[in-house]
Length: 296
Image 1 (cartoon, helix red, strand yellow):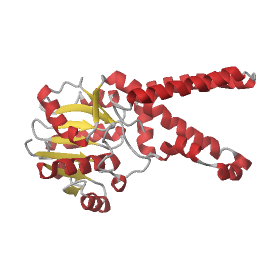
Image 2 (cartoon, helix red, strand yellow):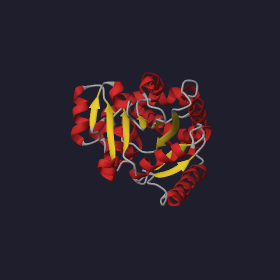
Image 3 (cartoon, helix red, strand yellow):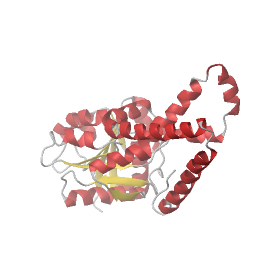
């Protein structure tokens, strides 16, 4: 492989993990620059080996980049592209880690010149922790990574990007933009909203709070783990995939209403069937996907 230059915009959990994975797999075959906001984060990114060079100077980060990996919160991606466009070289490839795709592409297609290519991406991975200090070189390994191919980039640009991204060890799949946003809502976005709702429910337990805290164990921790995720990121996701998220939240509301009705009417069989069907379906789904990617 020809030596590549990669710019990471936002060397946090995802951007930092990408850098660590690529440096581990490619070594000197890739040179990575990183855009960071503070001197502390610059020093940390270089110290950890996520990037070869870090700075707050946008031009210095992107001017020689073959590939630019955009990893800020979703609402910051388009404004960031507007800032870096004057400094990109001809043929540069833009990709991202944004959890929503249509919002970004509808805006980028209006401003990108014909010789700058955007290939939408979404690594389906993460942790409840944030920042480059939480980055791991194996964060992408065996996890699903969506590549959206309907953004007009030529085949040679896609292959140049994939040559690099394959080094992360992720399992790649392709979806169109609309389907990606619908599926991400069900698999990722609504679960995050729901986890936060469970924490909010506990927070509203009033005089029972202290007693409830004594009972917290694995079940509560497991189901609410993702509620510790970055608030800016998730607020942006809700603002940019609202139609799908609201639709699925209303469906979830309907399901919970059915459970409420069954419990209120002491319909044990209906409640039993609800849990039994969910267990059977979850077990079969995980078995089906275990050879494709790690669902955790």
